[in-house]
Length: 631
Image (tube, rainbow, N blue to C red; front, side):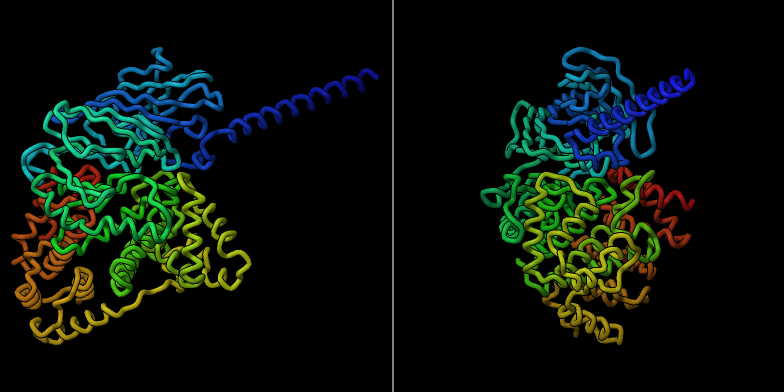
């Protein structure tokens, strides 16, 4: 009888323990689910922060820019909402010196973890359930990956130093202690102090003139992720395009830039006609010095762009259409993690080409599509046709998210959307996209969530459309699916014919090229045999002056061909090109071509060591691997 009672008491105790454990798990799960930030943040392997549990509501940034010391110093005051009653706030940092931390005005003892490759150091700050304000006083280090400090001789006008940031993908943490993930949004105000005579600009409401104090105030009332935090400091001036668009540039560049961007206001209008209102107030562009490592960066309200698109004939401004399109795909609706990067860039490439079609006609946009397809083919070839890196849904765990910045999310992503347009019909797809941007405005989204939305919002019971799309092969499969759409070849067919004539010894003077745009010339050169003879190169050069081209797209491709053909006549012009261009799109293929032969590698190392200082830290990282790994 006693054993029976004891047995039942033990059983009841075990049930109680199990019930308590289950209840605790439910409470913990409930706390996680009550996070103001979507649970998708939990799956972002590239942030060390705990922003999935603590809402990062607002940032008040107060910083001073010391051009002589090449240092940013100041405070980041975070307004938080600790809805899960967490005991600490964890922020991302990279090479930051943390001086002090206060929580609701009281100093606390913080902990900075050792640096993790790619990710930086987690900053642990003790907080209370009711904590609201966390203030970090800090300085940037010499290895800040987001920052490029330029001396006057590295700028266009050679008059004043320059600083600009590049925060994408995870580099905001190198100049601001923050929760650095694309799925984490916050508003911000900033006070930025710069040397007198320079202007500060940010991804926010900006000033159009310098002031005498060197103190500039900024406000961004729309929540954005950290990778869209941006700062530029330099001797710049402003020219208006229309009532809501304009351009900033150094004084010696401003007139050329203003002329080149004449149609930017029309681009905004065309974009709105396609997919709804532009929701960021102004749309301005700043032309940065030549060291900028990418074509453009879609910082809200102020696109950062490379001077390499100032071609003098408005032929390269489709890049601005791309950055503008990000105001919907990327800035408005953002990929939840860097594994979902195609949701930013694939949509933006598609949108860019639709804008250019409206402005220039379908035969023009067809050229953009075809050049993009060529880039996709080459990228798949270089990555490997079976490589998982050619999936749309990436797997970047344990890797630098910049490993995903290939042509795959851009071109495979945009061609997938083009396929949907072709199979569903343009009108039907446009209505779907417009609704997509509206429903997900100022939110983040995963690949899986998008596919669900696509299924319920467009495909529905259309089994024929579902079969024709073959979605899994595109999103979770390698290479280029067999149903990949191709653009019309109307204008490129004429280019192909001209190339064939040249290769059959027809003199260039007899070729009909007078109406060609940059895109026709790129196609003409891209499809030449792997290595032309020096005499063929000379013949083309005498006719078209490629070696002296002021068009960076054409010049870079021509110099690659010159290295391949050992056309040494072009080398004296290639050196100033490498000295003045910082865009990775141009640098990596050209240096890479040189590295293919011992003689070329010697030239590459000599030139790189001479001009490395002109390149952004991100370009230096990738080029260091290319050039020094083969020594």
